[in-house]
Image (cartoon, rainbow, N blue to C red; front, top):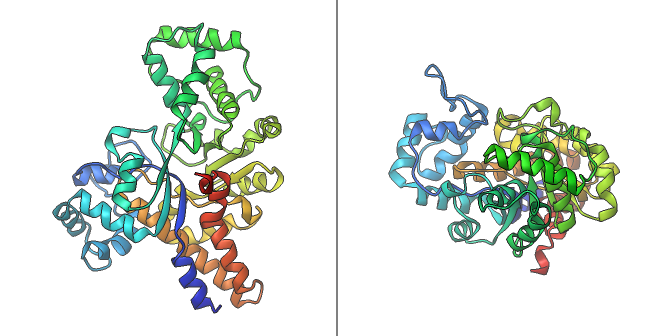
Length: 377
C-alpha cells in the first residue's frame, strides 16, 4: 500500500459518527445560518460575519463545489445558492458526500428544529441510532407532574423505557454545573430534597448538582456507554470547570461498574483526555467539535489526538447540529487530518502503511462499533 493508497483508503472509510445531532429540518435565512456557525449564543455584530472564520472559510472552500459553485465562492452567493436548492437538497448532497456510514444521533437539544434519527437515516441512506440525553429525560419527567418523593424510583424506570432502542446516554453536566462536582452517588434523601426544591421553583432546567449527580449514577446503572461533553462549547459552560481531568475521581468510582465513559470533543483539553484514555480502560475520547471550528488548523488537532491514548480508545465524531455543512466538514476535515499525519509517519519510515490504515479504521469506525455494540443489533 502506497501513501496514495492509504489516502484513498482513509477517504473511503464509512465512518461511524458516534456523537452527532440531526441536520436542519427546515429552511433558514442568512442571519439564522450564521448563528449556527458559531458556539456563541449572542447575536452576530453588524460589523462582522461568521463566514470570516476558519469554519466559514472551510464552508466556502469545500461545501460550495457540492452546491454547484466554485471553491471559495462569495458568502452571499453561497447563501443564495443554498436557498435556491432548498434545505432538503442541500442536506441530501452534503450528507451523501460525507461518507459517513452510521450516525449515533443525540436527540436532547432542540429536537423540533432538526431531523430525528429516522429522518437522518432517510436523508442519508445509512443507519442512524439514538443517544439519549439524561437531563432531557428528567426534565420531561418533571413536566409530567412527578412528585419529589417518587422521583428517585420513577426516573430509572422512565430512563429504561426511554432507552429501549438507544445505543448510548449523554450528560451535559459540563454545561449545567461543571466537572468539579462531588463524584459520590447521592443518597435517596439528598435526591428527594433537591428534587423538591427544583420542582417547587418551577424551573424547566435541571442544574442542581445533586440531581445532576443522580442522573450520572442512574446512567451508570443503566449500563449503556455514557457520553460526557468536555471542554469547548457555548457560553453556558465555564471552560475552566470543563477540563476532563476534574472527572478523575468520578472515573475511578465508575470503573468497577464496567460502564464506558466517552469524553466528547475535549478541545482545548484533548491532551488531558488522551491521558485519561490511556490510564483508565473504560475511558474513550474524541476531538469532534474542535475539528470543525479550527478549519484548516484542524490537522494539528487531529494529530495531537493521536499522541498519548491507545488507538483503540479514540473515536470519530462531528458533533454537528443543524447545518449539514457541519456533518460534511466534520468528516472531511477529520479524514484530511488523519491522511496528513499518517502519511508523514509512513513516509518517514516510522509506521508501516498497513498499520496506518488499521489505526484509521479503528478510530473511524471499529472502536465505535465495538463500544456501542453496533454489530449486535
